[in-house]
Length: 121
Image 1 (cartoon, rainbow, N blue to C red):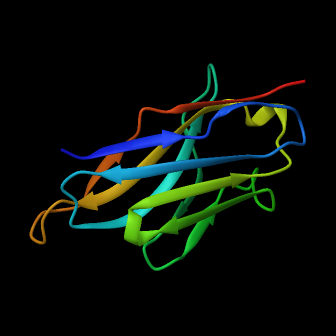
Image 2 (cartoon, rainbow, N blue to C red):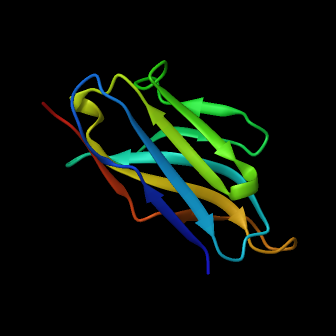
């Protein structure tokens, strides 16, 4: 059974920083893309940033220059460093991974349970 477990959310003032972590565990053969999505109240879930196993990254325009995604492939862990946070960054942040559990299995998409990030004074 594969699990994605996020940590690092919380309450921060505008202009502050937070670092999110997500560790994938269980029977995992390989992970392709790992990333972060977020969903604010009343809005659709949106991509924040993702990263391939080779290191290619993709960011939403709204977070470019403020957020940095990184990975530790040996630990099946992805991080999101969030700087210069704004109230509009307030959302539940979800970890996502595209992985396969055996060499012959197809890649499947997995989600974490989400962690709340609140930016408020």
